[in-house]
Image 1 (spheres, each protein chain N blue to C red):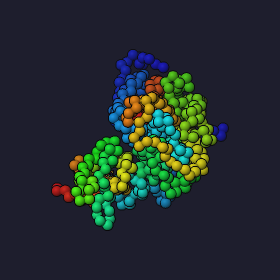
Image 2: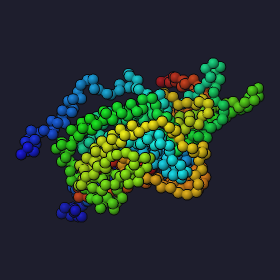
Image 3: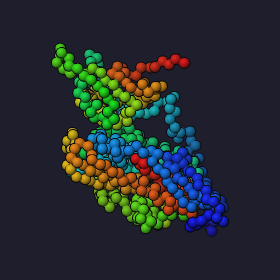
Image 4: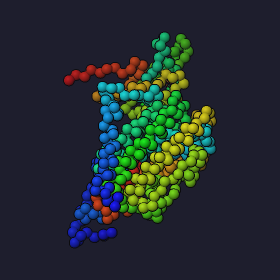
Length: 370
Length: 151
Ligand code: SF4
Ligand code: SF4
């Protein structure tokens, strides 16, 4: 790794972003360059800071629920699940069995939708324009199920503390089943487009390598960690919402480069379909809401719940002082933590690789800045 | 050897092109032609608010309980109620709904005990002014009025 410029020429400082299309939002990366080579990076974040954690202190527990959708807006359902589980832990209740199954179905659909958005935009960054249209075509189907279920496509507010607000609509099972049947062939289609494509392979292989030890040092989670060969998935490691009942594999790869992360995410989508199939078969009649008081006043205490969001470990740490409003809500966003590895991944690489690496980290700036 | 031949004959690229050509069928066009064609909106869609009235008497279903205003995280619903001396019941006096701050979370709708307040499937909410986003009771009951603009 070079630490001085070629022939001691002056290093070039370049701003990438915040309006750069490949930074996926408003991330500003200050690149220190020697020609095309990156000597170091500085990330400037906070352009999308809305103070979500502070807002939580002025809202009741139920009122804060829609705000968490606006952190990782690509995977709003997962955010809602994490928050609801954390408050349920504080209240010492659990959602009924039917609610848990519906939660699993929706979060897995959301994982697919999130990965599809990632795949489309990542391919777009690399220069493959076609996949994004196909990805959005399928993502639309998933979003339509959300819309029919809870009335919104993106910021869903699908779950409530203690269970669900809405009963599934007529034909919910049929729609999810149809999605599963349709979707696997589509994943094959994306793979046909990309997996063997020489440009795709050339641009991704051995780019942004992050070894397993480095991942652990940075606290990186999710597909990035699994691509480095660590079999760690919170759905298996500390099951929540009844994930222990479903059979699925944790896809891993060895090299920890951008190509492996692509493969891992593609396989994750297939595994999600597997979970969806089992969950739909598992959907039995029953109540959908646990007994929670209308005015929630959790006992004094604290709770930390983390779930496997599409991007990694998403944690909610909530401190209650016994009043109707949380004393403190802290979010452990996977995007923010994963972004910290950017500098390590792009040092010594070319500028074009920075684009690939930002894409492969799958960050959502709404979640990084909160 | 096979690998080299595959490389020379651009197998990987033609593989991808096959997918693209398979999608050239005009029947597989999925783009919604939005203004010409109405999008499919789900029944439960949370869009523009509406204040429901009793279809027979035309009376508002709202009982002035203020629960929606309390449930709203953004505190954007402001309502006043007054006591009807004849029926000795609380009645809605004024009601404003500031759409510009609404995030369509549906909490107000869930809180309403009489299904008076409802979020409808109407999603076209653009106005030329900010004031146009503040809906009063009349607008909530009758739907938005078409605005005339002077050029
Ligand atoms: S939808 Fe949500 S934000 Fe909008 S008025 Fe109702 S409670 Fe408030
Ligand atoms: S909750 Fe319903 S009945 Fe009560 S004030 Fe609001 S709209 Fe009226």
